[in-house]
Image (cartoon, rainbow over all chains, first blue to last red; front, top):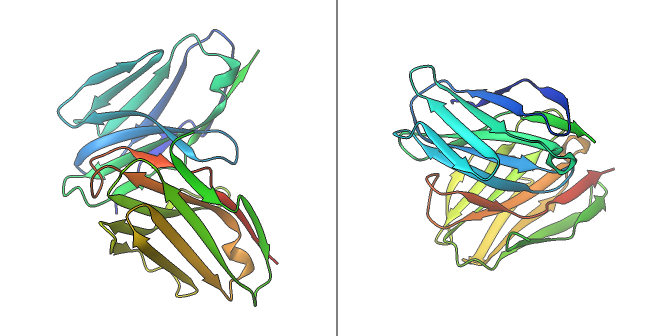
Amino acid sequence: SQQGEEDPQALSIQEGENATMNCSYKTSINNLQWYRQNSGRGLVHLILIRSNEREKHSGRLRVTLDTSKKSSSLLITASRAADTASYFCAASNNAGNMLTFGGGTRLMVKP
Amino acid sequence: ETGVTQTPRHLVMGMTNKKSLKCEQHLGHNAMYWYKQSAKKPLELMFVYSLEERVENNSVPSRFSPECPNSSHLFLHLHTLQPEDSALYLCASSQGTFWTYEQYFGPGTRLTVT
């Protein structure tokens, strides 16, 4: 089965800096979703981008999708300490019958 | 709050015990899911229910038994678990079936099997 794989596995930045996380997947997708998880808690949905979209914004978040490279990126601008969390991408295949999560990127934003 | 609640939040059980995890969603969604999250492993889908019917079972051991009595409630019955079953168990729901909708997750149940 396909799998989203995030890169890097861990990222440490200073407050105010931008954070970029990447996700790669293996087969054609219907959509790709990004989630955030604070330590030991449930996942919170951030953005869903469909295969016919190239970029979406939500507040300080920007997600891009490059279907030719089978990759997506999540950019968090002007990061805050509260952005410290793990970020996961999840890819839905074209049949719409599978959503596979990657291993996540652990982001630490230092105040 | 995401509109999905899980109880208990923490559970310690012996390998011979029987326990149940409960999930409730207040969002009017049609689909509910159980996931297992172990340390340093990707999130693993265990079960999917759509309109109260199970549509996905990813070869989960029979010591895990799901139950979905209605579209708002989901249970995971546990019996004779193994220490490697210790993990965070997450429940989620979504508006539509399958995977074209965003999922709303509960806070999880931290399970420790001794």
